[in-house]
Image (cartoon, rainbow, N blue to C red; front, side, top):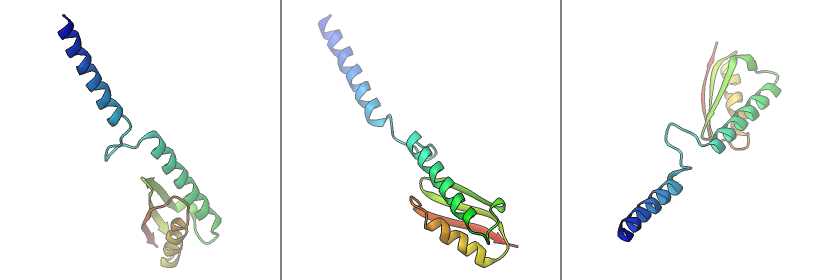
Length: 105
């Protein structure tokens, strides 16, 4: 009986160790809670920075962030405005990369 309990105890310890080491990892398609909050903050900061730029129409620019990579999409009046929006996004704290998919009308 003691041998059985020892085996069960070892198996439980191994399971607990495995769950501790993998419990907070992110997968390629899922964020941890902290990363989600960070990405939301970056998105908010980028939107605010673009909103402060008078030449850009913020309602036509969509901003999404995943793991610090900001994607700009939507429409602007000129290629210069698209370039300026990308520059503004790059200047925001926490942005690792900007994918500028803005289209000039």
